[in-house]
Length: 235
Image (cartoon, rainbow, N blue to C red; front, side):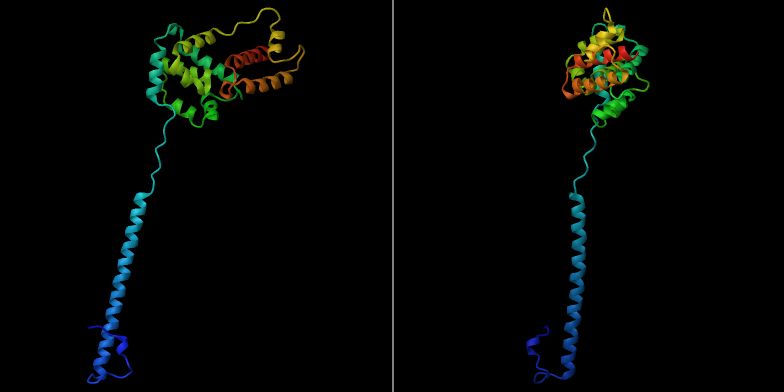
């Protein structure tokens, strides 16, 4: 039977000694303290369990998806190898074409990986990681397609590999030099008059490649003409 404070009157009830009352009070206080300790331990246990459950329910970071995987590069290469004109490709010629296409990009000092990473974060790094080391001929043709088409290369490789091979073959042969005064024709493509300074040519080229860049919604053919005209004027 516990201690009932309502029975406390300052003096022991009739028939109860002072020592008996003191023992009852002490016993009840000790029981309350023990119960308080037990409740505190149970609360701590529940808090630890709650924290464990919270850790389990925290969302785990999603694994990073590669923009381009090795299996894609292999599939593209296999499809390209089936197209007419494939036998004209060689490793050295394609590597030179990739370097030439990169120089015609803006800015001209970036390699293929850097240029693609500027367009889409991680694209160039993922592409190079998906290529065999050393690169096969099929890998190199895929790289040349990205050098030519930029971020749209995946679409062309998926939808029209025949056209990819045809356009790369055309680029390997080199641009045709226009007849007559090719300098005047090249200046006209850039919207300049004969006698334009080197600085004016650079400014016009910079403005037009931004305007016609395929990745910005421009015409691939106009972009190609602007770059070819610029190369004819500066070389």
